[in-house]
Length: 366
Ligand code: FAD
Image (cartoon, rainbow, N blue to C red):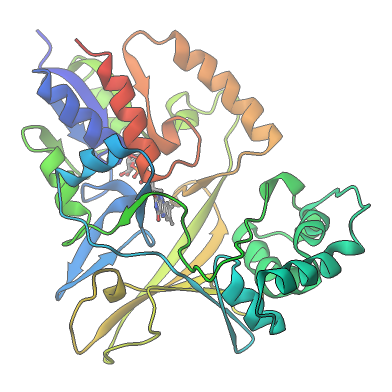
């Protein structure tokens, strides 16, 4: 007799929703994670009353009512609206690009004036057939927006010049001709009061959990532990890189406590000039409106991924997608292994999409 119905590798959102739903159907689950804690990238850590988003700012947003109702079972959400600000050489601009941004850039006051200005800015690039991201962004937004708000940020994010990046990375640039700084268009949005870790902990209630446990070592020693495997780590690592390694972008976070009540007046400030090496500063207390005499900030530095570093973003260019397809074909043939989440499926997923995907898969369990 095997001890568990499911061995779930990865205590992130995918693994935890999967475990929760499988347990509701009477299945026994063992959840392991190589990190020292549960939660994966949504992990938050309470530092003297401030919930710190240890792996970067996580704002829950969705238009999927079922997913919104689902996540709300595990925590109360506040009415936080993400309204980032961009800092460029001492100037501040509202994001996403909206009437406030256009006023700050050009002093235009009406949507008509803003549209006219964008038309002027893009006119010289209209007939261009963009061959890289720079040309594509210029043809969509014109010189001012590109230089001040896109170029430096994107080059830091990807570690390459915009002229060397593929045009497809920016599909479109949403311009809003209203004075609306809400970054997302989704119907529901918020931050769980008390942080995300409690959500994961409630989802995993009833499962056996082992942290500091790497799947590959564990399965070698316990090959018969479970009937099925749910794997949410890197799919290329699972297959021992036999078709080559997939590429990722990584991030470094520099987190510090500062003895001031309010450091920057907003949860998220993007630094869009190239000379400043980080892309964002997150001031965590603003997510939940925490009342304290001190604050905690994190600077976010994008960097190249190397084995051993945290893989944050898949680099979905043609070559990597081609390699991934080969791994996916192998995965499709597995009878007792399910690959899920952002690393198992080599895809950038927002939290709501990860929950949706885990719910759809567990729907099929009888
Ligand atoms: P993960 O959370 O990465 O969980 C996978 C787990 O598997 C990890 O804990 C890892 O340690 C473990 N693991 C890997 N390999 C092994 C192994 N060999 N053995 C054991 N364990 C292993 N989404 C939003 O909706 N809103 C946001 O604002 C937002 N902001 C983000 C900001 C950043 C910087 C990043 C990187 C992502 C953001 N996301 C956001 C996306 C969100 O983080 C993901 O949707 C979600 O965390 C994915 O869950 P997951 O379970 O697939 O992966």
